[in-house]
Image (cartoon, rainbow, N blue to C red; front, side, top):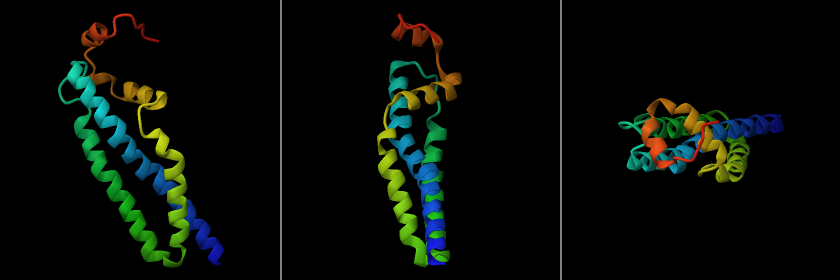
Amino acid sequence: MNYLWFTVAWAIGLFAGAFFLIQALIVLFFGIPFTMRLRRLGIIRGRGPLIPYLGSLIVLPLLFLAISAGVLTWLPDAQIGYWIGVVIVFWLGRGRCGANATNVQEYLETNAEYFDIEALRRHFPNQQPT
């Protein structure tokens, strides 16, 4: 029975790490700095997605801590499995926290409403939209 709870805790660790820890790190190391860079260039109007990113930077770690506390409370004997799952996701996902093609594409698709198209064309005149 301990193996079952270990496996359940491991799966919870994978879930919590992927959806709450890695996502918060992507916001911290890519979303906010990229937004600030685009604001300095004048490509983003107003604050852009900065306020939602700051909100998610608060909410996501709180959810991760709540899940961690829940595992500690309800599955104390299986918490090693939980932390193994979290570490696996962190180890595999740490390279996805910076500027990569996937993050840039998702950023551009999600935040298109904040872009000043004329400023974008001034800074990147030879680029054609796809």
